[in-house]
Length: 284
Length: 325
Image (cartoon, rainbow over all chains, first blue to last red; front, side, top):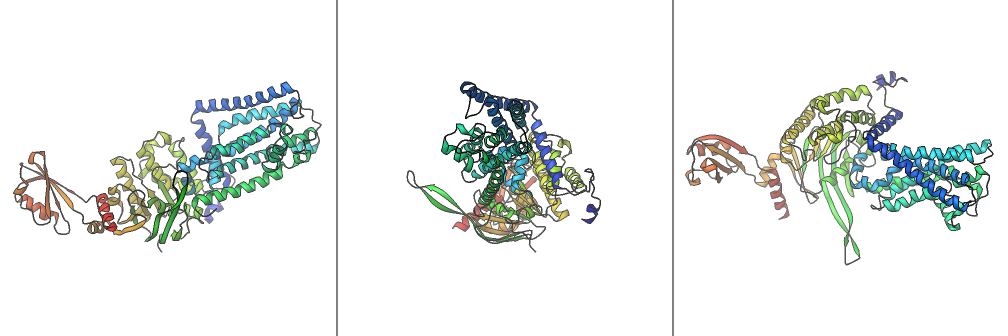
């Protein structure tokens, strides 16, 4: 429509303004946020629960490091850096695509069909319909842990390390998003695959938040080059802290986070498309 | 050009069935087998059949949720699965059992989002929303969260949601299931008006035969994946040999059915209320209701009467029986 395009302006209130992707996204996300706030009590207890969960993980880590004084060749503050980076990455991934791990439920209840008859990609609808604000509790705790780690770990900063420290949580988030996406896609084939899928997502988080040197050598290789969990936090931490890595995770892998995130996301998107095609019976 | 064009459409599924203690065997189930039909713009078509007859499978293939195993399907000029998103802008779908509204938000909050999904500027969706809200009496519960709405209220909200983007074709899967009489009637009136005023094509599956009677000029009956009947509702009655029933209340009781001199083709079915209420069934192709009434009136004074149309569910069952034989 020529007339409506002519009136287009920066003002979001213009009733004739065409609907941009940004406007749509804002509407979807704000609807989700308001939905969550509809149950105030449950929301607050969820947030508190998520903080507590993060705290438990932290205590577990502390208990180990406190008793062995060095965990996989790292001091407590250095371990905390790995933990903080991994937690921030996981919290972001979980915030965006965390609910794809209940994909089997979405399929079984028929909700997927409702999403399929709308003129929007299913993935976008899922990401916004499951934007779990309560997961913010986890993110808050993760950021606090990361801040503390950066304060206590003796890092000799240079521009390159600063850059890596900025990229790492984002690349890590993308890796977890990809893992969640894969976990969701998997459930199109294995309808009861939620537990199996959790092994990759929550299992990946567990591996990501501990010093990789503490792992058995073949496991190091597997979680670095197959499922890139150690690339989320441990490998970049080696570079930031100026440490040498174990045999399976050399320090140069610290720079592999971003390429791994891109490659894994691409692969998982393909898997997701195949999954949707499988559902509609269009092959795959 | 037809809005729905289906040719030799088939869909089969592979299911595993137990064969022995541990082994399982692959078995092919033919959900839809080679159906043909087309629907012109502005038509209202009822798509009926028993559970498992292939109704939902057909609907899934029409809406782009499922790829046909073979055959051709065109909806609004699109090939549904590859062009799913383009098609989604032209059609509205109401799944009676599943909600497309935002469950935890007030009803009115769903519409701006749906409008934006269909890329409708505010100046476009808002007047349409006002119109729908008024016609469907949504105003009083617009600020109620969807999860707190009654089923009837929610269904009206769902239909409004499916119609917001002025679809050319509306597909309704069991839209009146579980609704009370008033809600059903409101919904039917609205859908009928929408079709008359905007030329919207309607395709609905239902178990409630009065939906079909009120809304559809044409019925498609599917049985075991194949079309058993395609034509007007009255024709369905002809095919299946339907009988109408006249129920009369007499001014004074008559205790014996034999007292009535009923014409050929009319059968006295029973006496109720101590001789006051009598029901008589008759074949509408051979007798008019007036002839039956005249015959009864010649014996006793009729105080009140009602006429019952053939029960379509019963007709469909008869039709299946014939096709199977």
